[in-house]
Length: 240
Image 1: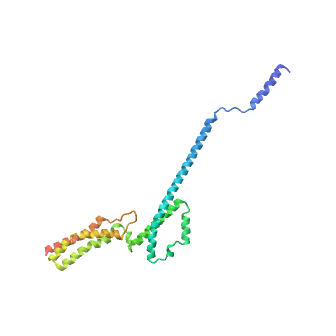
Image 2: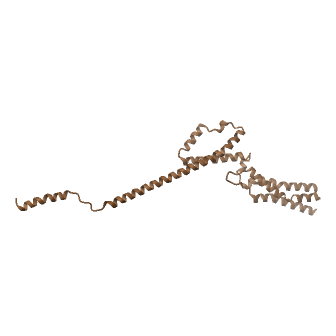
Image 3: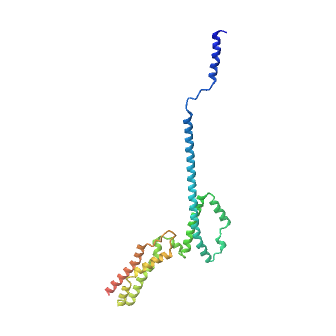
């Protein structure tokens, strides 16, 4: 073997092994791994925040549902006692199995569904309480405030003027009529005060609300008939 052939044989296998080995990585793997770690950490933090928000919302719904349940029980207890006093049998005040099944189905969606069902129950309880507290005036209690209050202020405001007219027709221009006019001067204020109390008594407000007594409207209803009647009687006495 010549010297050149020996050199080629020695060099050839070395080149073949160099070609078969994988190329060394040219980039640094640490930044890529750090970026993957940051992305995973951000995703985990987002999941944690969503879970915390959902848990907080559920806790608020549970607390609100407890408050609604307490309010509904507070309203139902006196209603049940009142209905029993009116002769309603106790079996009629208990829910039937189909009603229990329907209620369970409507509240199967979690605390939010339970809260919605309890709010509906509270509205029904308030409506029933209005019916019981109205004492036969349930339809009138739901009228607008002015027409409803007119049924109270109107008769009270007309009472004194009617009495003045009767006294004038019976006594004419005598001093008795003058005395009735003087005594009747505070009648509109008395009628307004009685109407104020009667409106609050006949049309009680719901809890947390205030009864609308329409004071200006009530004052006009009580004052105008008295002024017109007094002026008419005075003019008639002066003409006589």
